[in-house]
Image 1 (cartoon, helix red, strand yellow):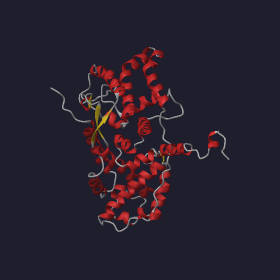
Image 2 (cartoon, rainbow, N blue to C red):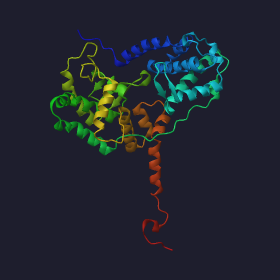
Image 3 (cartoon, rainbow, N blue to C red):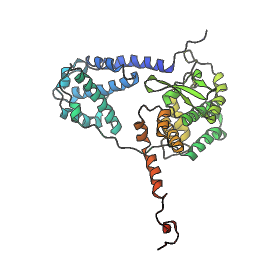
Image 4 (tube, rainbow, N blue to C red):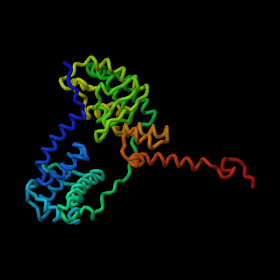
Length: 361
């Protein structure tokens, strides 16, 4: 009997929903209303992150705030929110920069971590304020942490070529078990990295692919984007060739029950996971560059940069990468716009001698 197909997205959403219920047991009871409402607008994975971030806030109150010190988090009532001031929120932000968690581990947050945790708290307050369940919203009186734009880390065109060449040939320098493992995983690894570089899909979208999602008639793959929307992403001949080289290897695998439809398998004959893809990307790219920390997301940036440089169409890049807001794309690729504008400075010459010729005066 053919195995019933349960998509990676459906399975992950189910697991995240069950995990969220566990985390909610560690929050104040009234928080359940917020998460119930958030289910209509946010994925389960996003709600889990919110839950973890909000738990830190209530643990801060229980351990640091004079008014609530010693009060168990799961016994706090909604009235707590109205007793928090803007100054308390600022002290919480300072606390987030460096603190010890419930297991005694030292935790620090940079700009990105601070902003995410404060965004979660602001959304939490906004829900209860909007529904007139509380009378104050001190989070609106505190400035949100600013994010400083970082340079895009990506592979240059020659680095991409060297990476793929290395993956195809590095087995020549291996012996014994390392060589055997390389030969066993070579076509899979090349297919994964070529797919990431040639389509710009997210690593979660890559590991979530089923065999049925690949259509060689149109050279496209069906991916489930953030939020659950499905989209066809098209690929070129290099990606097609890498996938075709891998499929005979895949057919030789006898998958474990429940993993029959997965496109990419791990050595354990399960659907390959995000961590495994991150590890193989790091393993191969470390031989190409030692100054860049390349992750699957950096391969996505490599694709986005190449597409933008080739087309100059920021809306196309946003669409292919699955950005809901083109401003997200513009923010990430603003540096490329700047480099294009810089070229304009030397493109027009006002006087003949600026070209090395003789002035007419």
